[in-house]
Image 1 (cartoon, one colour):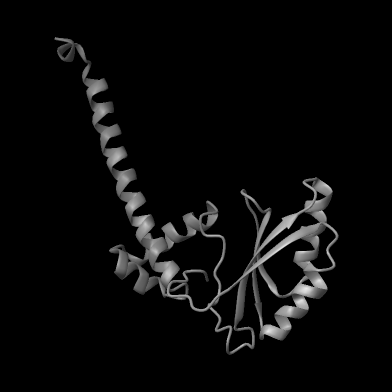
Image 2 (image 1 turned 30 degrees about the vertical axis):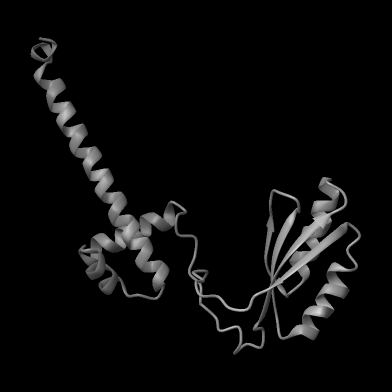
Length: 173
């Protein structure tokens, strides 16, 4: 009986709102498809991207620009061949600090910012404070980094190195 008391303008509003929600879900799917394609190939032309996601070129470009302005897309990068660059020796390093202070973290992070071998530095939870990705030429150059950079940091008390033997999946740009 309550359904019969809904005013026509309320019914119209509910219909428009349902269409809007369906459109938002579809938009999210299209945006996700755009993001997947751009992740695979950041240099894809707008024409090709539009064709792959089923949009007109102008609608596709508008969506990409909206994603950029919203901060979803923050940049475009080149995928590099580290071996060809002479930096094919890759390790991950777990680093433990002896002090859990802002000063210790700031000093360590500053030192990692200045080290060219450090391509990623993550402050993490668990038994250690940091996870680093190191890229250098070979084992002797890694040993220099280990000794001269990590070994001289006053707050580092634990270092565990994991040498990358292969990367069957690596989606980083």
